[in-house]
Every structure is written in structure tokens, then in C-alpha cells.
Length: 72
Image 1 (cartoon, rainbow, N blue to C red):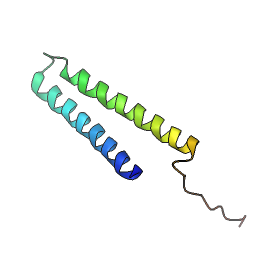
Image 2 (spheres, rainbow, N blue to C red):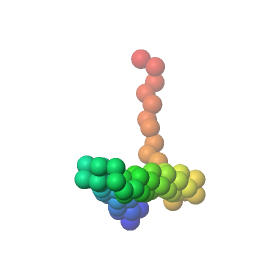
Image 3 (cartoon, helix red, strand yellow):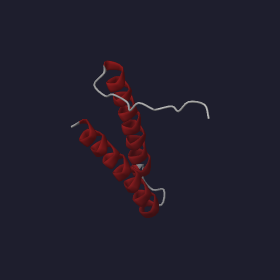
Image 4 (cartoon, rainbow, N blue to C red):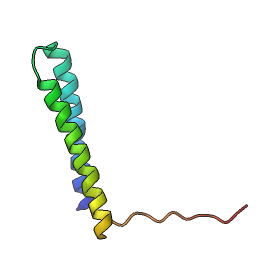
């Protein structure tokens, strides 16, 4: 369930990035839609990072263990 939420967040982030690109090409600086789309992208990215950090802190998300080999 958590993985699905993360994938959905990433999908919305990519959508807003594409929308910003589209608006930049079509509006030619006549509106603020580019700024709004990219602001949403930045806000969603920060929110996703904060939610992942909170999930790790509370123990809901467990990071994978890295196996370190001994000295060669």
C-alpha cells in the first residue's frame, strides 16, 4: 500500500513537470500556469520526501539493510 502511494506521488510529480513543459511551449510567457505547475511539482516532491522521512522515523517504512563485506 505504501509503495502504491509513493508511485502515485511520483506520477503526479511527473505529470506536473510535463504540464509545466507544455504550458511553457504554448503560453509563450503570457500566463502563470508554468509557475503554478512547477510550484506544485516542488511542493509534492517536498511532501513526498517528508512523508518518507516520517515513515522511516516512526518505523512504518523500514529501509533495506546494506550488507558490508569485510576487508579484502
